[in-house]
Image 1 (cartoon, helix red, strand yellow):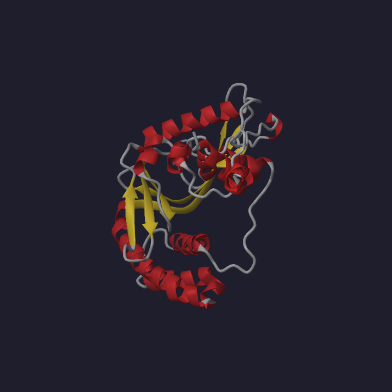
Image 2 (cartoon, rainbow, N blue to C red):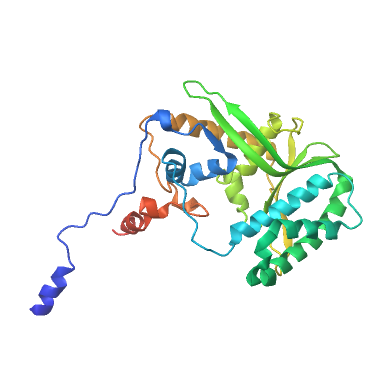
Length: 304
């Protein structure tokens, strides 16, 4: 009998699974300005947009933390950006040495850390050799190369407030054969091609739409002929180029149309900012999962 009583302590009369949050802020405070990367978050995890752009919350970095993967990506992006800006046309004879020097400046004091010097720097050296070889091969086929191209596109829809789409493209190449090649450097994972074509990774297609509208500074309006991810790892698989197989302008039109629907939907006062509305397409990093208490409501949703 004692064991029966003890078992009853953990058997509630009724189970009410936690429900995910569904905040509906007033339309006046909803964001009217997002980047192309934030649009992807808006699709995959609207609650994260609510937390950052409505509540103004940013997760804090750990105290005295070592440089992480995001820092490494920033260092590599900075070095490649400065190299392409310094040498947009002809490659210097000592290209590898120039890029390594830019890398040392980008890494800065982080190179004093043994883990960075022992693991990250050798990977960057391998990336440099691959990148320079690829540049030597590509440059004869380019009319221009623009690093870190910035731009804004204002979208005006009926019965909606003006919405500004922002972007900073890692690189836009103007091909000698005509059209643009829009490139995204990735030091981590890249989205799968089904995710890109299905609209769940709209960054590059939206940048193509912006380029067609002439929204990038220093880039004449033109159609995009190629969308590509340059995966820069520096390990055994040093680097690789993943070109999106679908027609870039078809993807651009679809991504822009989906953005129009998003803008219109969230101009409705009753439209909530739900966390992870489609579990099949989770965001890469759930930076606000703890705030939405996802561990509680997602576990409850799995129970009958």
